[in-house]
Every structure is written in C-alpha cells, then in structure tokens.
Amino acid sequence: MSPRTLSAATSVGTKAIIAGGYYTDVVDIYDDTTGTWSVAALSVPRSQLTATTVGFSDL
Image (cartoon, rainbow, N blue to C red; front, side):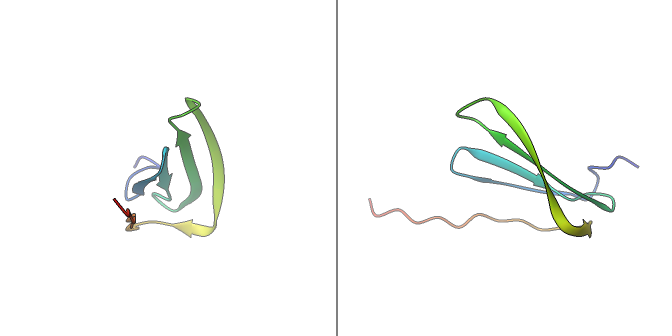
C-alpha cells in the first residue's frame, strides 16, 4: 500500500498541505509562491485523516 493512501490534503493561502497516510507521520507542504516543497511531521503517525480550510474575506 502506498504511504500516501488514506492521507488528507488541504490548502491555506499559497500552500498545499498533504498529511499522514498509511501510518506515516510525514507532512508535505508545497508553497506555490516559491515553487518549493518542505517537510514537517505529525506528533504521531496518522491515517484516514480529514482536512478542511476555513477562510474569511471582508470583501
């Protein structure tokens, strides 16, 4: 099974975030402004995650 199976993805501003997967703690972050990837870690491995982004606009 792929490590990214059962992961969660969302976007915040110019960043796309993919977290967890098949019992992994990896968080991949893509910054659209710079065109670069960075990596972070969850506190514990997670799978079958859900992600959402809530925003506010005063337009």
